[in-house]
Amino acid sequence: MIEAFIFDLDGVITDTAKFHYLAWKELGLKIDIEIDEEFNESLKGISRMESLERILIKGNKQNEFTLKEKEDLANDKNKYYVELIKHISPKDILPGIENLLKEIKLNNIKIGLASASKNATMVLNNLGLNSYFDFIADAAKCKNSKPNPEIFIMAANGLDVDPLNSIGIEDAMAGIDAINSANMYSVGVGDKDSLNKANIVFENTQTIDFNQIVNSYKACKYITNI
Image (cartoon, rainbow, N blue to C red; front, side):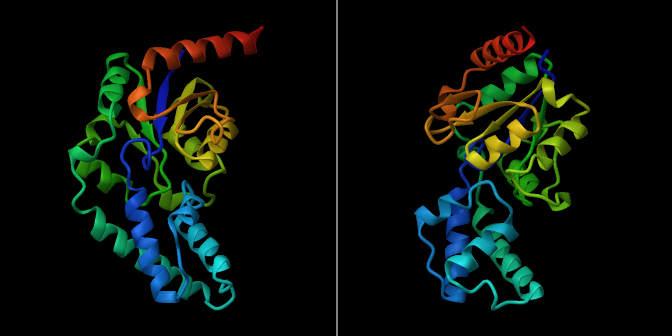
């Protein structure tokens, strides 16, 4: 029995990746490290501080800042990002997602959010989707970022559900690894080759099918229990 669907935010519910990219690019200019869109892909699904560390390594500046200075840089990035997302609205919900949330609710299944973003609640408010979510995991309380399963376990605990009876939805490989490590059924959104560790992959949010996920989950459980 499926007890919960647990969603990532960026790239699954709305596309804030472009805002993260612009914010990191702005910070990069400040510390003289160039960030392009290809490199930005490597930052998907991981925490702000870990993203900063990767950027500093890219610019060979990982030893040039104290921990306090790194925290200040990460906060600067967040200020840029928050300013950019102020104008997010329901029109920015990715295709098919609100209908999926409605269908999950109609089937009396709980919904949680497991996003690395510390601004997740604000983004959901701006999208007008808060009422669908029974629990939002607090990324600020997570010691480990994806691919560590901590935030998905936190979401399952907050929903009071068994991870084995939960579905995780992600668009990044780090997120799929986190879902799998949490012993949840993993749903990937994006390129099948990139997300080949997911139990099932949909090309985009518009093609996500609730019944297909349920049937695939049941079949997986049946095979596992043989």
